[in-house]
Length: 471
Image (cartoon, rainbow, N blue to C red; front, top):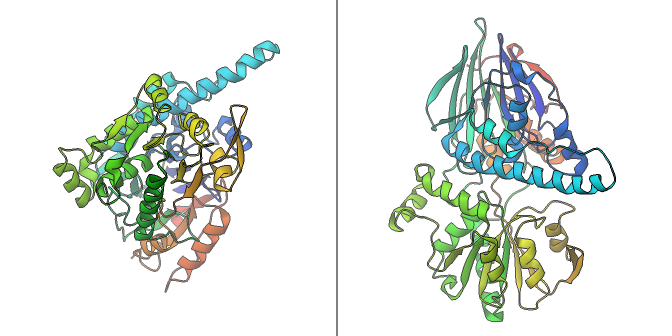
């Protein structure tokens, strides 16, 4: 009985953990490595285990750094079930298909150049057909129900409050001689965030495997965040410019729409025309609408009072087609444009930046993380000129970075969640860069009676029988 930390060990992405119980093997997560081109090239490497010998997968949530290599796993011989929350299954249907579409488009662009040079052609990481084949292996579950998924393995999902369907995973293992309980935090949500419940409290485990993304950082308060957003809207309304909001299609877009509805009169949003210009975000919002059972009480009440829709606004236009998107470029003032991609690296937001970024009186509202090297990061860092499709664009718009909107728990939230487990419970930290991981390890280790926290290295294996069972 052991666990191997295949991915997200001493780094943030590529979540993947291999558990062996007797003769059975299962994975928790199978995510993409994301980051630089060199980092992402690792996704093409062979798995350090035989996918054909994996008996089941448990998926914490739909984000690609947790789910994005599942089509590769199936393509490489995996034939078992994939267990996850029903909402995560529905989101994966969108996200894996979109990832495959981007893979195909990228490979096609590379191959156009390679054909002209008589070079060997490249294959996409995986195709839309292969993403569909992976989806056939999904089995949806509800929060709170316990299920025997393999001989000697029982599973229960609890609400992680991160995105729709995100789960804390409880696993009970029995190899006939030893019994152990593992708890995987998945990605824990930010306390007080719109729409979703707070992360569930779990207080029993022999080993806790938890994320550490913001292990050294506190988020800005929600009150300050909403005040900042209200101020941006007020200033932009006075200048009669457009507001561009690059937003991730899953989670952040729905939070924005919900928050706009909640503060509609207070923020004067009736003076604007709001466009959701992202087919993927529109499709994702439909999934959010179908799963009202996981909302927090306030969001459920708002949904019931708004004809079953927590995201509908009287001046909201959902633009699905390319032609509808192009028509927005004719609007010179009074438009709020929510579009992907969230880091301005592609998608329709780049068209809107090209038409609005140079204009004085326009505003760019950054509401999510911007990785190094992205167009969004250059704008946040104060670039006076950027290049979009080879054309230099002077930055005349005012750029605002709204803090406090993270979907991850901060250092206080993580430490408080870990503090519910008994003092002797073993804790392993994953899914974090080294500095925040080490800071969180030090903080948790300092809790009264706590054993030193374990920060596994990539590929490291831990014999679970060496961990003392909790009282």
